[in-house]
Length: 411
Image 1 (cartoon, rainbow, N blue to C red):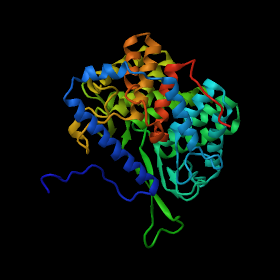
Image 2: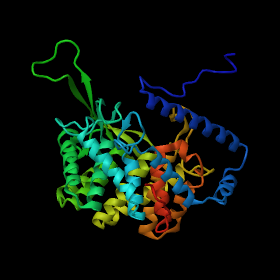
Image 3: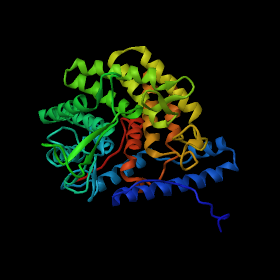
Image 4: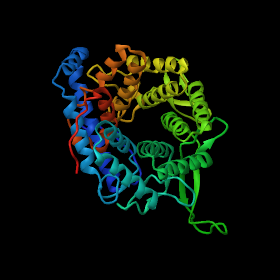
C-alpha cells in the first residue's frame, strides 16, 4: 500500500478560518487538475497542443461578462466587500469593477466599490488608532479583525482610493488615501533601502504586560518583497499625480531603483524577497508586477531606461516561464515548489497579460501582444469556480478588448 500511495506533502498551513480552508482546498484541486493536464501533455508535442488551444473558439467578450457576473454575484450589497461571511481586503476585485465602470459607465460597479471603501473605513478592519487596515475580519460587517497588515493589501487599497477619487472628485477618498500613506510611511517604510517592509503582525501579551500597554504588541516582517513593493510603487506614482505630491514620486522611483539593483539577477529575473541578500528567483508574480511598475514609471517620467528594463523582464517571462500548452508558469524551476510541479495560475497570468499589453501599447511591437494572447486561451471556463480570483485576469481581458468590452445592467 505504501508503494502504491507514497506520502508527499502537497500543502501546508497552520490554523485556517473556514473561508481560507475552502480556498486551500480549491488550490489543491486546481493543482491536481494542472498535474493531470501536464501528464497528458507529456506524451504530445506541447507547441502543437498550444496552437490547437489558440485556434479554439474563444469568445473573450463572453469571458469578460462571465467574470463580471461572478464577481458581482459575490458582492455584499449590505456591507460591501465580497461574500457573506469572513471579509478580506480584495483590492484586485475593486480595481476590476472600477475599470469596468470606466469602460461601461454602469453605476453598480462604482457604487459597490464606494460602499466597500466606506464600510471598511468605518469598520473595525480599519485600525483607527495606529493607521492602516487589517488583512481580514471574521465579521461580515468588517468587525472582529485578524490583526495583520500586509504591504500588498495596503498598496492595493491605496490604489482603490485614488482611483475612486479620480472618478468622483470626492475629497473623502483622497483623505483615505493620505491616511494609508501616513501608515505606510510611518510604520513600514525602510529609509535604508527606500522600500517597504512586508507586513506588521500583532501578538497578544501573555502574562504580565508593560504598564500602559494595550492588549497586543506588534512585530515587523522586515523582508522586502518585490511584488508587494512594485504594487506600492504604482500606488505612490498615482498619488503623486492625483494629490499633487512630488515627494511621493521620488519615493516610488527610489524604491523601484533599489529593487532593480538589489533584487534581480541577469539570468534569474526578479527575486522574491530581500533580507540583506536576495532570495527565490524567477517567480512569475514578481516579474509581472515589477514589469507593470516599470511601465508606470516610464509613463510618469518618460525615461526610456524603464522601458528597456521592462523589455528584459518580458524576455525572461517569455523565455523561461512560457507554458507550451498556453499561459505562463508560476515558477521557473519545478523542484523549488512544494507541489513538485509548475502551475499556470489565473491571477498571475492576468498580471502578466496586463504587463505585456502595456508593453505592446508603448512599443507597437506585436511580440508583446502575442505574449498577452498566449495567456488567454488557457483559461476559458470555471470563472464561477475561480470567483474573486478571476479579477486580475478580467482586467487584462478588458484591456485587450477596449473599447468594445461588453456589459449589462447590474441593478
